[in-house]
Image (cartoon, rainbow, N blue to C red):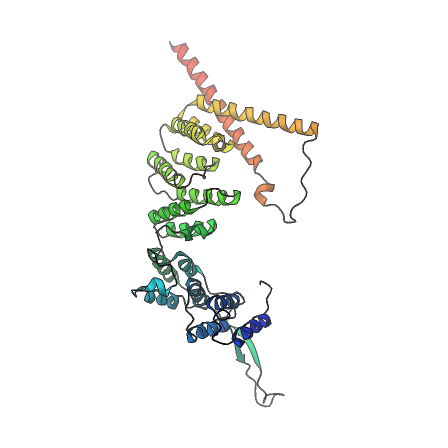
Length: 405
């Protein structure tokens, strides 16, 4: 279906209309929806318009998929306001759920699949028009008109217009739990929540994210877990309380609220790393960071512990003056480093498992090729020098105090 050309589309449309009108199985809502979606995929907007008009002329009842394709056609042809006006006019009627092809027990406002279609945009180069080439009188062939295909340049929208559109969409966001939430890809939910936060609707973004987590399947794939954690980290960064303990505990409340929505979501070391960043301006930052670290490790296991988390705790402890906590973190980092070196040596001696065959020819992401371990080791060395200097200073202060007494 992805490899159909325009000639194949025209062939399918001609075959579709060659059947008699009374054959409802061949000229049905599903067949019209298939042809319209195929026309929109190939940017054949004129064909899509003719199919929609034929569907209306033949009194074929549209469903929710038809309305999605209609909004998509209007948005991609630069008529965003007209698409929103059509949907709003239908929703003012008493029987609007039936006109939109929804189930009888539908509750709430605009359906989520239809709401997402408004985030589309006018496709560059999709709108073309044949323009007559001007020729001077007397030139060879001036009597025969010649044309060229010109691409229509879309009019750029100003910033306030785009903000007004996004605000109107956020006001129409459906906050009623429905199975439609589970059909959304996590990356789409990430961008929707990000748009809400940028427009100042942090509470609605949190509520919509919680509803989405509740509708997810019980078991999540590894990719889904990564994107879900990215959504949680987005909400952590969006906390606007004043930096300090207030912001720290506000972030922890946000995490508890989102994690309680789905039992299969577990925080990572990056989650704890982001939470500890709000303790920099606290007076007892090292002590609170250590308590938070122990609470996370007790509840969520050792996956919340990493080298960057230990380094941040050690840095906060040195800032507070708790050199004992910093020494514990340094000792733990040194022990894990020696264990990794031992495992690496053992693997080199025994040979280790055979390398896996190539499953794809694409290059690995840069973040997996260059782990940034050199920068992390340099930060640990800087932290060790700072801790050593503080210990030497304390020894000198104790010696001076002993001499005075």
